[in-house]
Length: 492
Image 1 (spheres, rainbow, N blue to C red):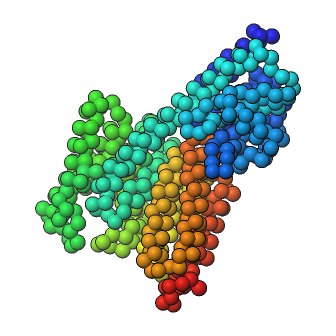
Image 2 (image 1 turned 30 degrees about the vertical axis):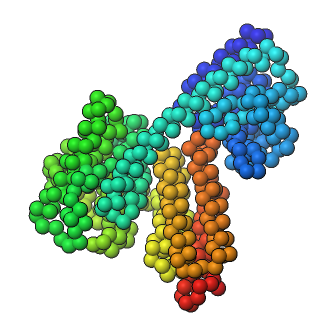
């Protein structure tokens, strides 16, 4: 009995060791543990978090009588009581016909696995199950720390790139839109079977983050040239074009410090140097052509041009998406790699098909900057839908990061706008509460997704985001729009 049980424990430990991500671990944890528990079909996995009203248990997976519980908070009182005990003790809880496993997690109160069991676990079996606890906890720790390291590196890269972008644009949102488009194009290229040897797992993992540093060399460009409102002369154009070499030099220096072993810095360096090259050899700074231009730079170069075209700048109005797509299509084989153009067009088709909400004139609050913010938020929710449709987890994380960041910035701008216009204190307080609750919800969604507690963003969640934003713009924000148009300081 013990030898057989020990063999099952070893098998489970081996299974856990082979998981490659937190979401894969949680998806398979029930069948893994079922091997040693000899259980019927009913089990669930939860993530325990502490809130103002007490502990909450988010259901990650459920089977049997819990199969409808996944994706929501635990509502079974008898199960929650056992889980509260497991959290308080920080260890497994064994009861008649039931077992709760407690696995420590570095960012919450623990991951808990509940099982209905046919018979109780003997003390010797409970002692052996400690190996399962240790192995699962170690896997959780390793996955979480790896994810945190990636996110820390990405956050530092974005912060650094933001400094360069704020010298050239009104907002650093350009770099996140660029990263999202870059990742989508790479996903489509792989899906189409193009550049199989170049689009490695490592390339997919880092290309979005590497794209963020494409214009880092602009920090070395004089302000009077970078922000000149009129047309640049030949010498000023030469100075501007030097940002590619200056960016590469800075990134190469950083790479040498790490003995040129950091793949992210290698990608970033080649993108910084080559993202203005043209496929026909007419670009700069090296006039490389075709496959001489690194694939990373060919992808980012297209994504950069698209975002520049559809964005408003001090020297130009924003183009429509249709105009920008037509321009890029016409430049296929000249400025852009034809296969990258093909993937880009597929991305745009996918975005249109997955669109959940569209901006219409009736949504205007008659304030240019706030209308612009609302358009961006609508675009981000549509991009979430698109990324979910094609199953692109990396892109979903990028979009969730940008959605959280942009939502907080927008709410701050909107609240300042209302304060400056003497919006009634009671209405302003209510508006702030709506903002705070929505921010809490999307931050929670992001945390759950990034830690593998959500395997995806289901349609119910996407509908919630769409309906909340639509209602907030068309109902709540229209109150101050109506007051502004009538010259009143109160909502109507």
